[in-house]
Picture (spheres, helix red, strand yellow):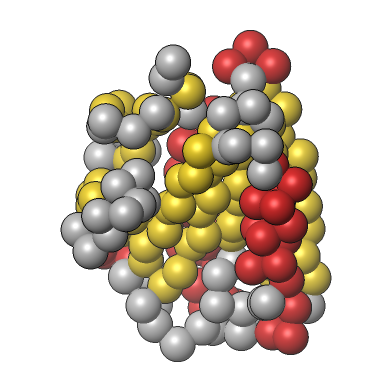
Length: 162
C-alpha cells in the first residue's frame, strides 16, 4: 500500500498563549475547547493520517523539576510496549528553547514521539503524538518519520512571547 505524503509547507500559529511556532499547511490547529482552566492546551491534527499532536502548557513557578519529572514519567508509561526510547537534547540558546525529544520505538507503542521544551524560567510546553488507530508502528513507520520532521520544525520555529 502506498501512502501519499503531501509537500511540506508551513504557516505560523499565533495565539493568546505565550508562544508561537509554525505548523504544516496540511495540519489543523485545534484549541482545546473543553479546558477553560488550561487555555493554552491544544492539538495539532493531521486528519489524513488520523494523528494528533497533543500539547499542554504550564507556566513555571519554581516547579521546573516537577514538570520535567512528570514529562519523563508520561513517556516512560510506554516502556512496556517499547523496544527502545531514544532521547535527544534540544538546545537553542538564541531563542531560549531547551528540552528533550523522545523517540519511542516498538510496533505497539501508543505514542512514538514526545517532547518537552522550556525556557527554564517561565514556560513549559509538552507534546505527544498519537494515532487514532491500533498501534502498529511498523506499518506506520513512513508516516511517523514524515510527522517527526513536522515536530522538529515546530521545535525549530518555537518562540516564547514576553
